[in-house]
Image (cartoon, rainbow, N blue to C red; front, side):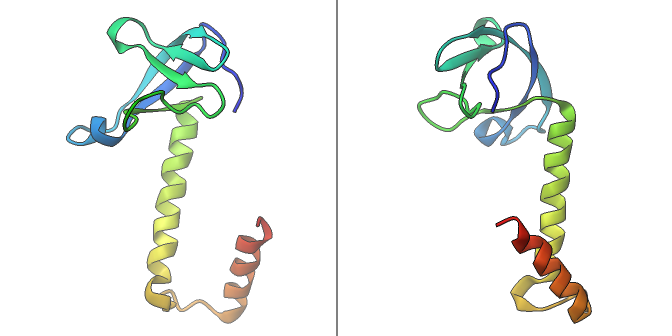
Length: 116
C-alpha cells in the first residue's frame, strides 16, 4: 500500500470486538502524523496508530479498526463478499444448484484460475 500524507482523509471501519454489538460505520479519519514505520489517524483519545506497509492497526491484541482510502473501496469489498457468498451457495457441497451448462462452468473455471 502507499504511504499516506499528513492531512489526508482516510476512512476507518469498526471491526472485531468494536463491531460486536454495534453496526459497522465508516467514519472519516484525518492522518495527523506519519513516521518511518507507523502513521497516526485521529486526534486525542481516538488516535490510532497503523503500520505503513499494510495499514493494519498497531495493537497488542485484536484490531478494532480497518482503514480504507475511500468509501467506494469499502462498498467494493462488501460487494465482493456478497458475490463470493452467492457463488459459494451455488456450488455448496459439490452440487451445481444453478444447473449451469458445462460450457459455462468451464468458462468460469478459466476465469477463476487465470489469475493464479
